[in-house]
Image 1 (cartoon, helix red, strand yellow):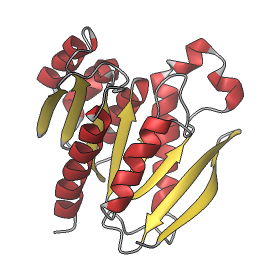
Image 2: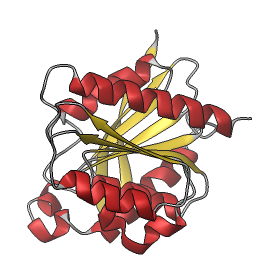
Image 3: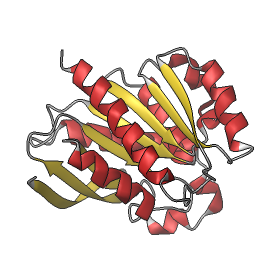
Image 4: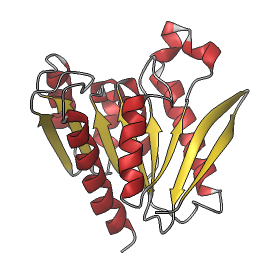
Length: 215
């Protein structure tokens, strides 16, 4: 499969967000990744998921929502409103780029990035699907009630504490939703075969709901 890869820089107020855009030929949609606190677009786990999505004819944008200086500040890492604002800016940038402007949009969030993805989707009816991996969707707060995009929450079956937070958020969501506990997985999905399950579940979710968006 032919895939176009491009290093991109997205202006966000005084910041410049760096990312990697991968667009397979005949892409059926695009997924923007919102990384968690202390992570980056170089995350091996999210890059693995992105490659699986690319193999399923989905474009991906892996980007850093914070500059290196901002990421060194613990408080900024957990500034969900700032992360949300940056994700919306990146989404607008994707909508205005000729290569991707016609593609249905989904979000893949991890850790605190999952909260930003849900809050951003609540503010934009054009976002068609959201997937959370080991996320903190509870940090989206009251915005969970306003999410209309279908949401898939993926949590390690042994990620105790995070499971309960996801169950709380799941009960608050009003949209089409699914909570899936990956058997035997802990928070980072380091156990054999668990990250593969995450990637395949995410690919199926996006293919279903991004395809529906085109109908």
